[in-house]
Structure formats: C-alpha cells, structure tokens
Image (tube, rainbow, N blue to C red; front, side, top):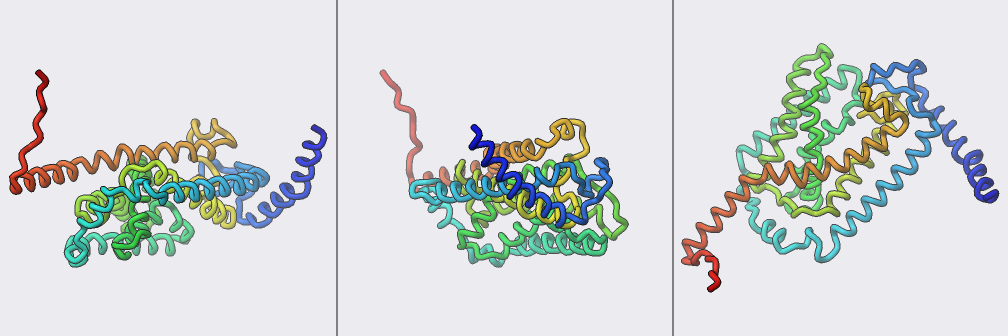
Length: 317
C-alpha cells in the first residue's frame, strides 16, 4: 500500500502537476472571470489538473476504440466484406451520377453555404468556430461528393456521417440563431442544417453511395472518430484560444448539466455513443424504408419478367 502511494505521489508531483501548470500557461486566453451564462467563452470550470488528466485518458481511450473498431470492421467476414455490400457496390452507375444535374446543384448549395459560413466566422472575428462539428460535417459531405466514388475512404466518410445525423436534428430542435449583424447569418444557419439533414437522404436514395450493412464495430469506429475530434482538436483549440468549442470547456447553461459538475464531459461522451447508435440503427434505417420498398418492388418486377413464380407457403397436412 505504501508503495502504491509512493508511486502515485511521484506521478502527481513529477508528471501531473508540471503538466497542469503547462496547460494553465498555454491557456493564457482563458477568461479570469467565470461567467457560466456565456457559453461562447471558456472558463476554468474544470481545473487545469483535470483537463490534463482527461486530455490524456480520453484521447488514449478513443484512439484504442478507433483501432479496435477499424480492425473488427476490416476483419474477413465482417459487414464490410459481406456479399450484400459487394452487390450494392456493383449496382452504382458512376457514369450517370457524375453528370447528374441534381448532384451539381446539391454540391453548389453545400459549397455556397460553407462559403457563407467562412464569411460569417472570419468577418465576425470568431473564425475558430469553423471547427464546430456542424461546419466540419458540411465539409465532410462536400468531400463525399467530390471525392472518388470507388474509394473506400470516401465510402467510409459518408457512412461515418450517417452516425452523426442526430447532432443535426438536435441543432434544428434547439437552434442557436444568435444575430451577429452579418448578411444572411440566420438564413444560412437554417440552410446549412437542413442541407446536413436532407443531403444524406438524397445520396442514399440516388444510389450515389453504398450504405454499409448495420455494423456495431463501425458504429464504435465512427463514435471514436467524432470523440477524438472533440477530445483532441476541440479541447486543445479551446484551451489555446479560450473559446468554448462545442462545450468542451464549459457545459451548456442548464441546471441538469451543471448538476453533473466535473463529470459532465463523461456524461456527454456516453450520451454521444448512444446517439450514434440511434442515428444509424433507427434514424437512418427509418429514412431508408422507402428505398427498401423500391428495391423490393424492382426485384419482384424482375422476377415476373423472368417468369419466376412467387414463393408460396407450403401447407402442412
């Protein structure tokens, strides 16, 4: 027991405390006055020591989850290598889709909305908020539309996004339409978020991308990616700039979140995992019902043309 205390004391004095002081020094932009009502500004809601410990622990955890999820997903016999996925991949007509007028119109809307977002953030003197998940998701959709359609990276990017649709629905349900006085700021907020919701549905029904079969390992991989983005990039940039990027420094201004105290980020990461599962297993499956009915009718029509009789129940005597 004394040895354990000695080791922990050594780690605390020689590693954790110096690291915490380093974090406090680099976060010189952090406001000295705590204002929990202003969720745009950072504050030492969590101590430098806790920031240091969580930064290491969360990033190691999410990186391990990413590696495990990727390894399981790429494992022979997983959903990624299923015959159904191969059939879906072969059914995509790239030559038609590349010249589709609707594709170009959708891409133009995505690029136009992102250009407006850049304008609003740069001239609103808060360009660091371009790192907010909704804006990054918009870039992800743009990448999926301009990237090589035969690339596994492009397919994986689109299918990862299908786990994040819940965030767009949440943003539309609780919109933050703070007026910054710039041209079309409010209008672009609604345009951006409706694009984030509707474009994936369009891409699913157009057949532009293969939707991977349900895979828990890929859900873990997608969750690990978005969590790494929050725990490494948003938390790191938040500490450097003093901005509360997606509540990584200060929780949302609600009694429930403040009641969680220093454990609020642990709760947020747990809820995010559940919502990633809800997005892919429930929301996307529900949105794809019409496509499945269409494919079922097409398959039945083909069977009738080929003269294949329908399967009838065999009655037992």
